[in-house]
Amino acid sequence: MSDGVSRTVLVTGGGRGIGRAIALRFAEAGARVFVNFFVNREAAEKTARDVELRGGTAELLQADLKDPAEIRRLVAEVEHRAGRLDVLVSNAASGVLRDGLELSPKQWDWVMATNARALLILAQEAARLMASGGRIIALSSLGSRRVIAGYAAIGVSKAALEALTRYLAAELAAKGITVNTVSAGAVETDVWQAIPDGAAALSAIRARTPGGALVTPEDVAEVVFFLASPAAQAIQGQVLTVDGGYSLLA
Image (cartoon, rainbow, N blue to C red; front, side, top):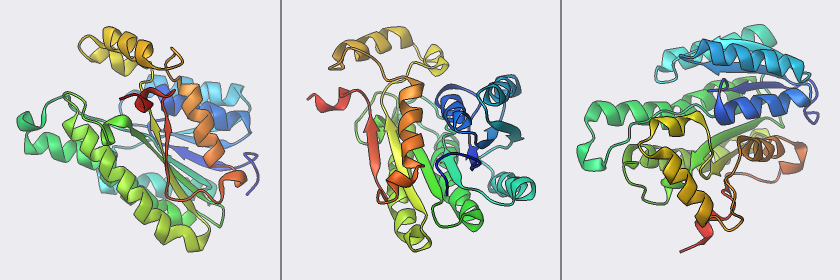
């Protein structure tokens, strides 16, 4: 597997935020990037245009990752169009901001299916298309290990995702495929606009971060790109925290 050039990459939730930054980073290395989206086609189309402008090749694929059949169709379409997959980035996520005691079974199942089960099925399908040197990289958050108000379902789903990373890594190592996760700190994306007092929360996080700056989508994308490189072949089953040092403080 060459370092970026001509690689085939699937980024779920690739239309906006961190997913968009990841897609553009691979585009800069000349990759063929499959940009998955579910609802916001306009944003995904813009990302696809920007992938082309950055030197990559872009293709859009719509799929609801809560549905196992949709995931299988998604990966089958990658196989049909490209014949192989070199890098899977499992970035798409969803959630509901409620305390654990307020969660309904439907809300729980929805978040777990999107954030944790999707990685399992994506990996099962993607691994068939990968040769030695293949990469599976997931995205997590600090709520997997720390208690954040209203974050119960999302936090538990991300904890499950991180555990699954280790199991998949052990199972796929013999094929030369690595599986790792990047746990991002607070990243200023449009999702914060939907959170009550989101701007104030970001300001407080910025002030508490040792360097005084929030992590950017591009910061996260660079780490994902590194994990997808040949230099990261010996990194297996790890969760790399990218938070500017926020989680270091008691």
